[in-house]
Length: 536
Image 1: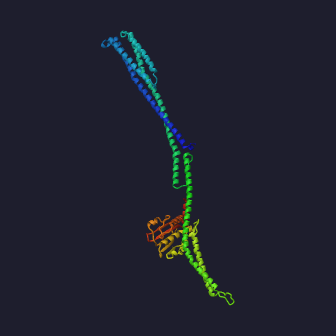
Image 2 (image 1 turned 120 degrees about the vertical axis):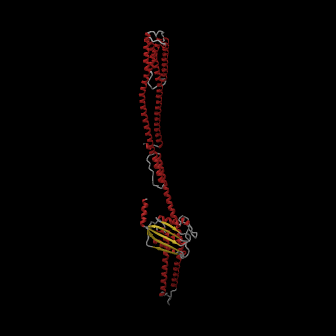
């Protein structure tokens, strides 16, 4: 179902999921960092309490030591300048004030530590202990205010007991902090594992999302685009039968359908244009052949005049012979003499001979003028060439030029007879036009390596290399008489190519003659070419 959604929706959904995972990863990272920062702050703040608690405990210890020093001096009778009662009272008072000052500093730090939200336990135990310490200090303050406390054993015992109690309370303060630190360690370990697990889960989901996004991009975008590009290249390289197949993929499938529709329209246009080109080519070939027929007709008309003159002369002689028949005495016409019969038979034979001669000339001209969609049939190329030569020989303008035909044997090839005749006629007439009276044109027919080869060689004006390069281009002509359309050789090239053959021209230079040759595949070679074309 998602495969058929528009690409825009896929990108929105994928981007939303990826953004949500990145946001979750960001939140986990920031929250973990803030938690670490808070723990570091709490540890830093509470770590200051420990030396203050130790200082308070040391102050209590010194106060206790001062009291014990006074009691021992009184008990054992040691008297010196340091055990003078006034000095001991002052020292005790100074130590007592030190204890109060140490307690104040500790209490201030405790208030600062718990001023914000602290994750390291609570201060209830510390507060209760400090309350007891304040009570004990108040009792000590009341007891040592008596000027005789130093001399009074009861007072000394009470002070000693209260200071011992104060010492016990002072030693409790560091233990509370150590217990809070131990509790914090367990809590931080749990939080650490929780955040590590959450981070691993979010990172894993993010990596999976990135991999899924990459796969989705490849499947929904890059792979269809590759199919589109490969299909477009195939169409651009001429494979117009190829169609791009894309299932789903929304916009890209629409683009593929548009490409297929464009290829189909282009194929239809190409087919239409090819048909038009073929029609125009046939028209040009037809026009060139009609021009050749007109050229031949002009020469043939002169050739027909001679037999027609003979026929007319014989007919007139016969008419006179018959009209001059002798009559007898009764006025009736006599029978022809034997000599007249002989003359009449001679004239009738001449009339018959010349009539068949005219018939042969006109049949060749009509045969050459036939054009249409003639199928290629197995034909003796020698007969085609010989027919063209026999027809050209009747043309008066070529009577003073020598046309020689050499052939080896029967040369069969599947050809379109009228088209090959036109090619042979173009080459022979071009060769005859290029030579002077008395010149020679050699037409040679041979079979080489499964191909029929027709060569037309003359000793005429020749041609330059530039003329040879442009020889088969349409409308290119360099005839000596300035006539011609320049389409004869171009059409001949097209006809030979359509037959699967090749036409070549060669000349050693101006005044050194020219040689034209074309090859046609024989029956077996032609069949192989047809099978090759069908396989392609």
